[in-house]
Image 1 (cartoon, helix red, strand yellow):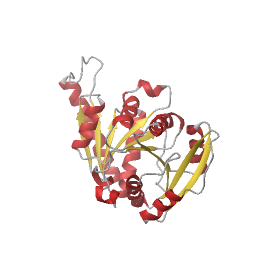
Image 2 (cartoon, rainbow, N blue to C red):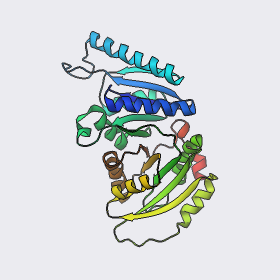
Image 3 (cartoon, one colour):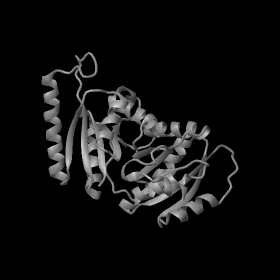
Image 4 (tube, helix red, strand yellow):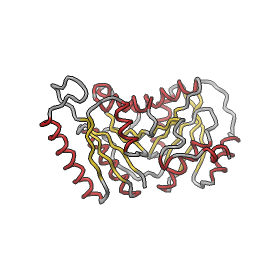
Length: 282
């Protein structure tokens, strides 16, 4: 069973992300963790929160969890945290054995002003658990079309297999997008990618090439053209690929109104989304 870890600060964006997560969890019978960082304007540092304020936050979170559990008929657990640090959020998610961290994001320029907005960016860059960023006004739709942006590189089999496992839960179609920049020559078809697609054994995968100077805008245009339910970006630590796609993940949180799921390349053995080493090595 999957476990979704939802970081909330009771803002509009966070509440929308919570509802999105609840509806997603309901579809696949997943568990939901509601994680709220208790803060106070008079706090002098992490953990410096009055007992009264902490109790108020806990009661509000418990009521929200009860309402979500009752409405969507799923297990919903409230958890209170006392630190804003990315490491603390990630540690709590790991403690709960979360498969995905879900956070709401607001449109720029407000994004950098909010706790969760900046933390979403930090977790995307540094996290060890996949992060699903939900735009503030995004309404839930069943996940039927997943777009995986892979640049000009052949996708890693382990990562592709991981995504296939996620997509198969929803019986969703996966479209691999090879993105070319500027006036680069396009060599088609991608034989290596086609071979990997066949190797997964998953029937609902296709491959497309798009080209443009502004990667984020071209990708967003394609997402809307294809009515994509979810954009997936895999952050790899390989030179230019890292520079382009780490930045792309950040830019897409500003540009697109499609939910964004970001994996890091190290996430081979985490939760139900993990891939065993022997599967990668064949």
